[in-house]
Length: 210
Ligand SMILES: O=C(O)c1ccccc1NCC(=O)[C@H](O)[C@H](O)COP(=O)(O)O
Image 1 (cartoon, rainbow, N blue to C red):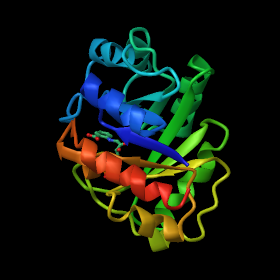
Image 2 (tube, rainbow, N blue to C red):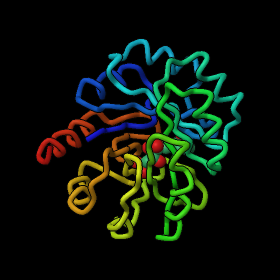
Image 3 (tube, rainbow, N blue to C red):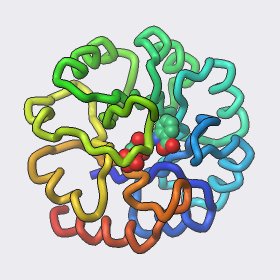
Image 4 (cartoon, helix red, strand yellow):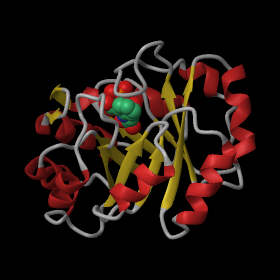
């Protein structure tokens, strides 16, 4: 099971979270997020991390030029597209960065909102399902209706995100079998300030099922 902790802003916290066993760290490249980190700062953090941990840049409705700008500075291993990017844009990103993992996030609130996912099959490597929030793109702490996903069997590997915590993760994984989980606000003291004891608790709880 992949474990991605998103919204890393501090090198020491990134190192501690990687040492605890998270397999991927996410860096928010969306300027209006309270978890935003610029490319230089991301690269400073990355330089302190083990090379085995996946390093994902999270973008939302960014231009190709902006994504290229960040990738020119920060040694990321993946790009998460968390806005309303159409399949054609994802294909362009994949063509520009064929060696990187392309993750497309979908903010879902109804079974119908899962339908467009099939149009992205060729263009991306991994899916991420997050909760829909009318004002915020991500890091909302809002939980998906997991029952809605009981017949969700995508062609690609997928992450479950949205309001996951150490306390509800076993319940989520009791009914669903994602390839990975993604957490942000559920393991924080405040936006961008990760709570290491909460991450420890999360990984302890996960070890009961792995
Ligand atoms: O976290 C943010 O601030 C953010 C801002 C803009 C776009 C995406 C963002 N986060 C993306 C993530 O992958 C989060 O981990 C995901 O939304 C889950 O967050 P949470 O519900 O707080 O666990």
